[in-house]
Picture (cartoon, helix red, strand yellow):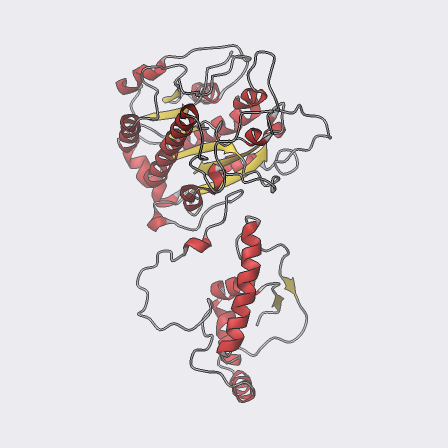
Amino acid sequence: MCGQWFHTRSRLAIHLEHNQKCYEVIQACWPPLPEADVAQLDQEDKQAEAALRKQGWWATKAFVPAVKTCGPTLPPHGHPAAAKMFAEMLARRPTDAMAYHQLQGHKVTRAPNTNNGLWWQTSDLPAFVLHSPQGIDEGGGAFQTGGLAREAARLHIRALVVVHFFSGFRRDIRDKDIHQIVEQRSLAHATQLFVLSVDLCMQRQHADLATHKSLCWWKARAQSGQLVSIGGGPPCETYTVARQLDGLGPRPVRSAQEPQGIPGLTWKEWQQIHIGDRLLRFLLEMLLLMSILGYSGFIEHPQFPTWETSRSLTSIWSLKAVRLMKRLRCVSIVSFDQCVCGAAGRKPTTLLLVRLPAVRHRLLQLGNSGRCHHPAGAHQALIGKQEDGSFQTAKAKIYPALMNEVLGRAMHDFAMELDPETVVGALPNEFDVYTVQQFMDFDIVQPDYHGN
């Protein structure tokens, strides 16, 4: 039709779906394929799709670009030559009543679709998430990065408050955390932007985010226009791959077959899983609400362990809730190695970002497209225990300075781009309890939950 050669049938179907002119040409020149031919092609596509999904790719993944070929193209729609070609091919290869006639397989007779929303199946979801510049679901404009979503947010914001959940202890002023990055940029621009770091290790009475009451309270703050950006890394101690290192770390408590807990765990381990799940659910529900309201945020967690295929591992990035959020237009996902931001260990990490595309763009500029570019042996292995008895992975909880810089700058800039006119000039009284801060030395790490 246009002289392009696509390497798979799925990629060709995508091209025809978005190029009406090419689709009209092929319909005018070629009659529908017989049912038997379509069934064979569908079966081949299913096998190819299954192989791709096991590797975490969509069925339409393009490993190589389309090739521009030389030679004559088909006659255009409505041309006598197209009608002649159609008739000759129909005589040579008769079709049947159930013939292929549309892009997705077999002809289906149904009422016209008056709803322009998305139509998808569970099989359309990837096995896990790793990278995504943006999703495809605009939600009627509610999930746009800007546009209608930004205007709605601008109308309802009452206070510019940025919150870093699960922040851990505040650090010395020389070790810039997200709180300090946002605060300093706010002062430099003379804006009424307020920053809060919320963690149980600092606000023992009010920062228990595992309770339903706490979730409702923070949701109410967002719905009342008192939050502009949130983010954090919920505890990963029950998901970490270090649990698979045969005695060098704590024993496994989850698996791909038993993501909610392996049978035979102790009461303390079940409590650890229960608290971890509730904290993760807290941040996911908050991010979904921020997506709906036009605000921004992020969630950080260790990357899905693509390098480990011999064990049954699980990750938050394979949860259905996360895979569904990936489809939202305002959501982008980036996987990178924290060593490109200055971390001592490599630590592959994934960020799910809500209306913070600049974070993904900046991280992919570091190292080897966000991946480690250091020579072999440059990083210390986060395996085993330290002299004080704590696990080596504990030190990896603290984000490197450049990672804080990238996240903090993006959260601040998002708030400034809204430029609302109805914000208050003081931190709302509801947040007073979260102004309590505890500054600790860099080598003091907030403890894991161990049933306490």
